[in-house]
Length: 332
Ligand code: AQP
Image (cartoon, rainbow, N blue to C red; front, side, top):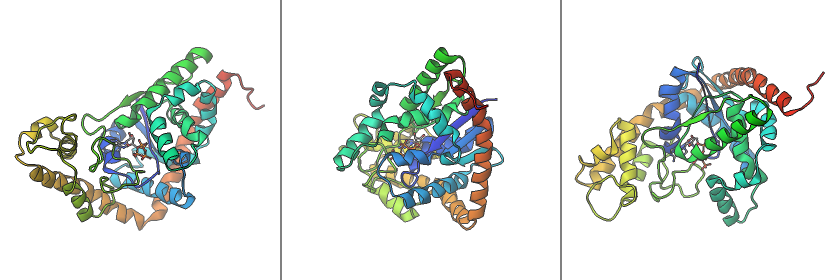
């Protein structure tokens, strides 16, 4: 049976980008078609300056939102990365097969390390090695598919390289996974700066729709979205990135096609109004279910406990096999 793994980092409140680029696919497709594991990858949140209490709070919120969005514990495994030691056990072995040059080429490392330096802080070594831990997250579960947004595609490519290299050097141990991107909205852009990705950890929040934004707040953000010079609604990511982003958001919410939708609008205002309505409609049930689940924290704890148990069972044989293959003496 196909195995699917994907994760979400508690570095901020979940955004519309996370939802349209990844979570919705997990809920609507992945959990129904395969053995699927979805993980709050909290160790990855420690790669940048962080507040411990906030990471803990955001981890719980992310898990609750995944369930609110529709992940069903009877169909898939939902858990927290730090609850399963196999991720860090395997990460070290993979570090022993990866080079620092490979890590420095990662676009996310370049962007995030530049941001950390600009903020006057040092760059944590874990930010450099983050893609190796992500590779361990995926390879530990012998995942065939990794449903992600476009920004993570390069990291999945690296995971494939590391898996192939390990298998060639030490014998077949890992399944070589592939990234699966959504057809529309694989990269939702910031509403105020449509040339940058909508990112949950960005300091400027006016262009970011959070899943838990009050409806009127989300509506205002969309109505104030930066559009482009000109007034004709056309789908052209290069020439009209702001309008293209709104068209993609609307298309992803309604199941339409951005280029076809463009022809149905005579003004930016009408496009924004419809995009806002579609987003509010899409997020309403998630917000409502989230509020219900917050009233029942014991349920979320139980899901995460069971999920970690199942994840451990699945990961341990593969990680043990990797330890043996690379030449480590098994405990007597
Ligand atoms: N703007 C986006 N459009 C489409 N997909 C997106 N994803 C993230 N942002 C967008 C996808 O959401 C999943 C979980 O993301 P993550 O937690 O791994 O974080 P990230 O990819 O580093 O991006 P974020 O959410 O903006 O976090 P920060 O600000 O901390 O970098 C992934 O599948 C991702 O592709």
